[in-house]
Length: 141
Image 1 (tube, rainbow, N blue to C red):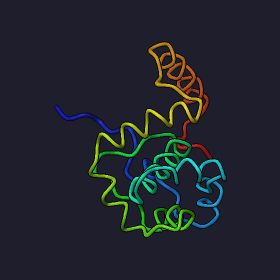
Image 2 (tube, rainbow, N blue to C red):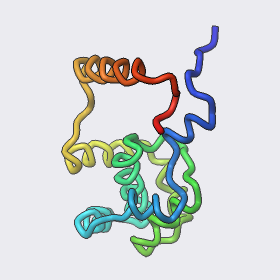
Image 3 (cartoon, helix red, strand yellow):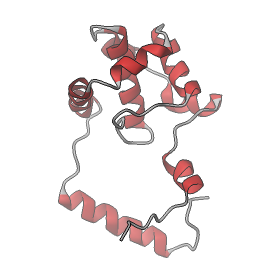
Image 4 (cartoon, rainbow, N blue to C red):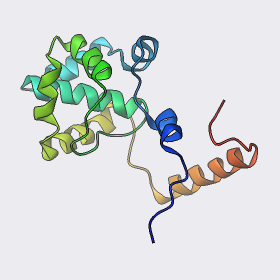
């Protein structure tokens, strides 16, 4: 039996999708001077761009880059432009799983976060149930 998907594809994009419009890109993916410095100390352009992409994704929508994931061109161009790197360099980064995992491990500390524990998951589930019980809509308004 297949897994049931609680969200339709357009609902999933609304909640977990990456920004592509100018206002959202500026709000969520503008890199600070310290972010730029952290990205620029990576050895090669693909790693610099990949690091910055991971940083942006971990901040919003709060996830890491998936294996072999491709990003919307507008999103990738916005991040690459800040580093003065060509967006096509990104395809070299997504193929290197160890590098991506090293960057995630570093970014957890850099962002002051950690991997959730089972207690964190219980609290998140409880909070989600409370919010869901208060509405009959699938998405926030």
